[in-house]
Image (cartoon, rainbow, N blue to C red; front, side, top):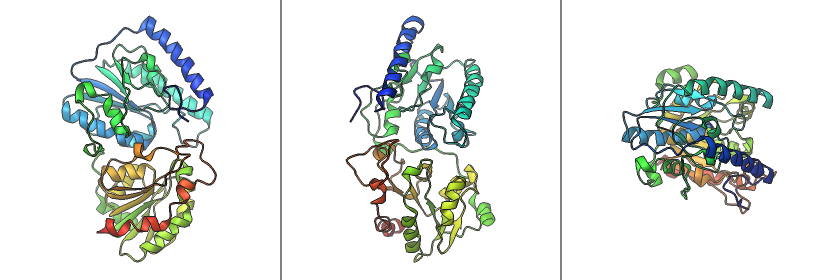
Length: 379
């Protein structure tokens, strides 16, 4: 059931909390925020997206559009520190800032530690940002966490959507009917970039990958190879290991090597069970730059709904993604014509943070369904 309110929440208590916060922000805006006029051009702006890494990859497509239209515009980017490797030294970003909200923090820290980190970063970063004079600040994420309230004292237009809370503080509100997240984000920039484009016209913009030759010598990858990325920051999105084992057995008939990637001890233990010919287990052995290089050098990437698919899409690699019913994959899928989605539509989808124990939306996708995609991809 959809909420009657503009928030992307279904829990009545969460909706009530957002309503109370927005009531306060309405009074605050009425008393202390004047009506800021949108600038005619963009010379210095701040982009804000504290969401997960894959979401920030999607936002780089908007960064590309902005730099093409306004090549001399100085663009700063505020993200969670998990996205630091993505934005640091990016050719389209002048300065990067990091605030890690506990709602999006998937680290092993306790909730108390995550909240303490958030407060420390807010104190430091907001003091630094207050010294900058921005033409406008754009809040790209339409789901919580929202950092709009941190900028209520800034003397410039705040542009965003109301679905994450903080709407009364915004100077320009977007109510987009677009399906994909990149088109929703593009709606924020219609006064400067024009009408939202067809989805096929947006392409993520990552830094050029590091040279793969030296890396392949170090870790023993034989070219050509396939990357299998079975893990996700949300374990509920993962395909059963038995299904991956069947796929690996099917790949044994090809001449391609198999590289397994991932992060963390849990995913490493899972990868140890995925034994097969020519398998190289690199889970936990690669930094972000090495990981993106391995993805960029692959013939094909097989993965669940995770950052691996978004990176593969950014480098225009053949990709098969095992979808799920937790979220609307049509909204979040990678920006690439070479991404193939395996999705089982369910009446109970999307279930967001409350997946059922059966997870039929994932477990009913069979290894044969994935294997049937491979001949077309390899050709």
